[in-house]
Image 1 (tube, rainbow, N blue to C red):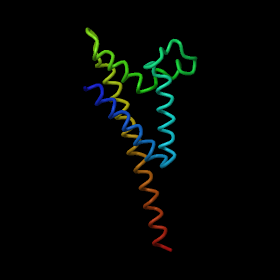
Image 2 (tube, rainbow, N blue to C red):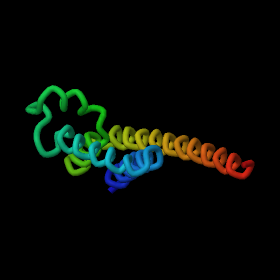
Image 3 (cartoon, rainbow, N blue to C red):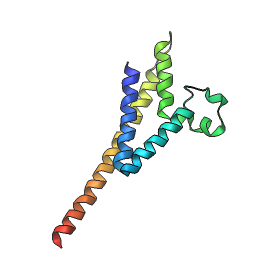
Amino acid sequence: MLVAITASFAFCSIMTFFVVAFGPLGSFLGLLAMVFQLAGSGGTYPIQLSNGFFETIHPFLPITYSIHGLREAISVGGTAVPDIFVLLLIAALFAALAMVAYRMKMKNLDKDKIAALSE
């Protein structure tokens, strides 16, 4: 359960960053990221049988750690702690990036309001 909750935090923070930083285009970028993750995660098709592009991006995809963590959680003798840690780092990184993007947008909005009031 902890792996699934941590993964959902990571995915939500990634989508929040995309939408805050890029607006409607961010939703499309999030969709593209999901498509690449499905193909490059190794969850439905072994990554060793994929082409070089997906083998290259495999370690950088959050869903890779989600799938590995869930596999470790249902198997005997493994631990999902490293995967949970990576997912928490991803969630924290993208949450921080979303906050920075939000502050930058608010700063630009405040400048626009001040300029409109002074005219």
